[in-house]
Length: 168
Image 1 (cartoon, rainbow, N blue to C red):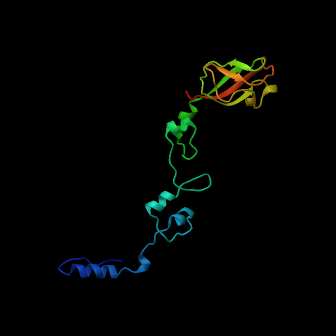
Image 2: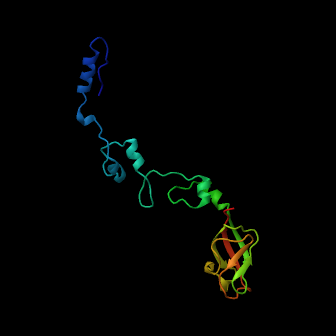
Image 3: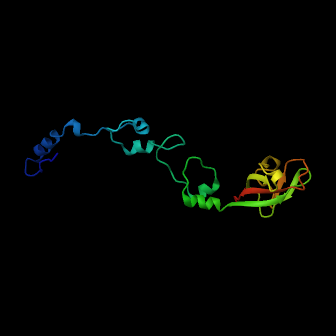
């Protein structure tokens, strides 16, 4: 709706007349934070505070914060979203390393791993040994260049592949 231009000595009256011309139907009511989160009322506007309350989760659409590459590499944050760049930085830290088991529990040589590296999975390289064998070995490397076999079984003739996430 066009409003009269305000000019001259009677500017206050003209201003009030313009405000009086605004009817309640042309005003936009603001949605509460709860209404913003549910998104059920399409007849109301959203304030910055209401928008901030619309946080995403695994079950709800909303605003999401992007993880930095460092946060993605740390693999500890469950609230931020990952960008392709962060995912690439994380994937670059994954290795597949082959090693031989041993007779009884103890250290198996796994050249290149460092204490703190995470063992995502272990599987056999021979068809008879394929499948998850992670329970036979430690899940976090505790000694450089070794993976600890926790199983007291004789695995000295078996060759394994470990998916390692390098935190170092």
